[in-house]
Length: 107
Image (cartoon, rainbow, N blue to C red; front, side, top):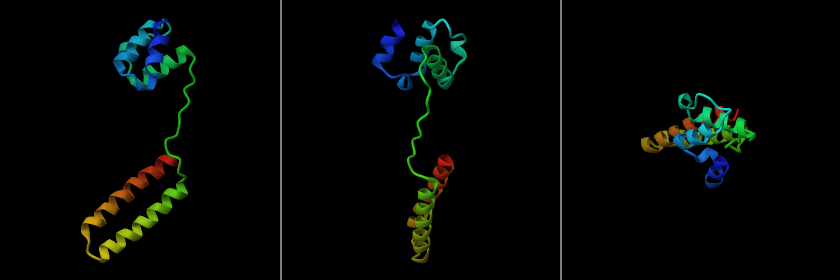
């Protein structure tokens, strides 16, 4: 089958929407291919092919580790503010903000 040869060339997750549509059009179980976005196409193709759609977490850190990093950056930011180093204070503020976002995703 053509979808198996396409899958061997490139993993489904790495394919573009155009390539995914071509694969989906060859599968008779999937309808409404042109109205789907990439996430919908991936899910439909994986269901039709019988591939498990397990989601892999990208972050290996725990919430506690992330929060401890936030605390250390807060101390560094306070020290930078005491020294009137606005540039480093801004950098630490951005890092704290990114880590807070990461902690919400990990939780």
